[in-house]
Image (cartoon, rainbow, N blue to C red):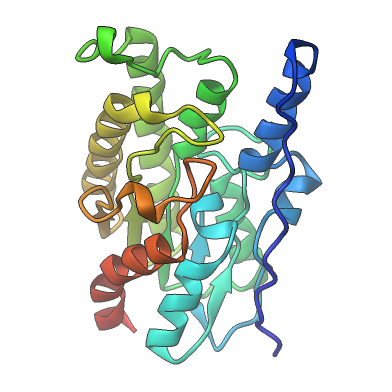
Length: 259
């Protein structure tokens, strides 16, 4: 089986005058989220038949853009796993790409014998609106630090409900163990996202609580302590190879005993 990962070329984003501003926003959203088929084009190849089909990866572009987290883990394990991650995927909704719960449902359709699910979810639910003119009010600049908006809190609280429902669905499908990976702090790059720190803190606490309170045996992996700005690529969001390796190194001690 050919399991080589083809890294997709980044979308070039124009940065000229004000009359191109709308085009910049659209292209920027494409780069981060993907759009329809573009979400797949900006993702590592789907793998539906692996050495170990009982381990399945689902999630967004943190996993999907380069596939390097999976590459690192497969190298450690000496075997390949199934991959369904798609750039732009949200925990709730499918405006941009297939939702993360639907990635799991596709995996079940392909082969329902799933023992372990590794992935993330909820990041795009916050970052897509934040990129698009901060429409969810989840940025807290220095003059508003310590006052995360109620609008943002409500969105994150809804993610808790979606997260618990998704994890419970996995348990009902017979999944033995879930490894849910949290989000690190974004930075200012192509997208101005340094001010997402409070939303990311509240979001991670909420996702960890969903992991704990679901019926699935779920472990939450906090990536914030190990990822620095140098581990994030020019867009301010996605992990560089160094960041992917650090994330894989956090996941591996949770995954290895289960294999």
